[in-house]
Amino acid sequence: MPILSISQISSIVGGQFQSSESASDPVISAVVIDSRTILDPESSLFFALKTDRNDGHKYIADLVHAGVHAFVVSDFSDELRKYTHCCFIVVENTLDALQKLAAWNRSQYSIPVVGITGSNGKTIIKEWLFELLHNYSVIRSPKSYNSQVGVPLSVWNLNAGYQLAIFEAGISKPGEMQRLQKIIQPTIGILTNIGEAHQENFSSKEQKLKEKLKLFESCDTLIYCKDQSLVDEAVRSGGINPSVKLFGWSFSDEKAQLYIKTRQVEEGVEMTAFLNSADDSKSSAEFKKSSAEFKVSLPFQDAANLENAAHCLAFILCQHYADPSVLESFRTLQPVAMRLEMKEGINNCLLINDYYNSDINSLQIALSFLNNHAKNPYLRKTVILSDIHQSGISDKQLYQEVTRLLQLHKVNHLVGIGPAIRKRADLFTMQTEFYESTDQYLESFQSAGYGQECILLKGARDFHFERISSVLQKKYHQTVLEIDLNALVNNLNLFRSMLRPETRIMVMVKAFSYGSGMAEIARILQFHKVDYLAVAVADEGVELRQAGIDLPIVVMNPEEHSFENMIEFRLEPNIYSEEILDSFRKVLQQNAVMRYPVHINLDTGMHRLGFDSQEKVARLVEKLIVQEQMVVRSVFS
Image 1 (tube, rainbow, N blue to C red):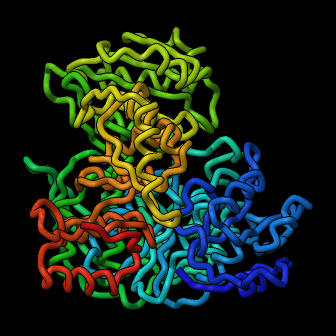
Image 2 (cartoon, rainbow, N blue to C red):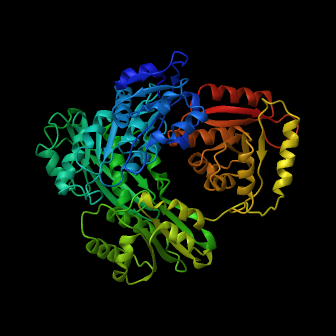
Image 3 (spheres, helix red, strand yellow):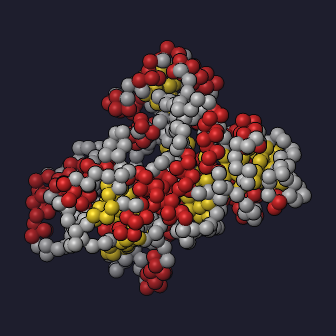
């Protein structure tokens, strides 16, 4: 990520720089659009984006109070002018400004940049390439950051320390891809497939494909599947810039540049790839070589993941990354977190989270995954499904197809959430229940209603199925504690009276409460202006965040399996060993997170937790100096 002054950024985005003589020209390293994600206020630049549902300008007052001094705005009102110690960049459109800034940052680097688009598989292919190329310095889009907002936020993090960049691009209507192409400027393209997702705003699949191909206008090479006839015909008949070299792979065409054979084995699939002489005059001369054979093993058998793995293998071979360690890494590929994520559920249930999107193609993929993990005859199959948006067909046709898929995969129980699926309740033949909204479902939720089931959570993002996941997921470290809140406040004030005014206070909050204990304690402490809260484990911090607690929270005993949740809910780990340091940094890298606050624990005599020797502290310092994922907020014993 670049480090620029506000005045430099104003020049890049073509804005009007507004600041008083008393205001400084702060240096910026973090670009943010969500007031809840501010980690380092002094180095953050807030873009006040306007959407159909929200307006970032209304959060500026709170952000100023939180210590943010730099803003990009489209409405420079009299209310904002009173913040004389702040800097404002005034532009016509804040989203355009964000995209211009990201495009400028992309233009500063000449490393290979992969642009991935398609109807399904973008995130999985991106994450798998990141895993396969773990020996290289690779930056990629966090999670599914592939929108008009997500792409510039991803590209902003690009810097000279990377050897390769992988960014995904998603669109929902005509005219969007050209904007993303200017930001990503890919040198290598991967087109995953063309299906039904986001069809609503396109007149045909052909129109949608034409729009997606705009991402590859300036690419050197495009990787695609020749078995998809619509795609193959389009790229070969002038649907793409003639200077782009084509690298097509196939499961069926032995003459394709990359022909892939599969063979099922007990532990998954063995994939054999034959790299042939080029079959296309537009293809790169570097591919024109005698046939070479490569083998990889995969730990799954479903068609969707085989296709995703084939795209990855095509990229690895096309771009000459096929050393033995990379090919061996195919054996350990796993479902991407938050996409088909397995969790231990309540009452001996298995929980599958797949609530990033909801369309027919991805539903079929998720049901296949459900089938593969519900082979225990004692496990019933339950699907909790939201309305499906942007299908491009009538609701009746859509939910008839949903019914067919559920029957095909022998689903026992359907929970439908949303007005559209509820209206089509008569189409479903298995055990069913329907709710108008996620809120209505949670209001009627009874944990005893689930037991010995494999539960698939499949929902569109706006249904916020993570809330359902939190009640279905097994909880740990549960206790109940009753405390006299008046006595607690008296104790706090007593200790505060003994301290210097500048001394900050952290309070350790104990045990789970589910809204009847710990949350009330935290609210009281927040009201009385303590500086930090600390909890024993991440689950407790998550409960506080879900209860609306905004104070910084330290997790004293962070566990590796909880790191993703800690990042999502802005929980700060206590780093007490080199192993925790390395593991947490790896997860930060996987999520493309920079400057995340952490706390260092030194053992000065208790012999419980902490760095306990000069040698360990020296190694800690060496590692902290050369990394940029973490920033130390405190050191304690």
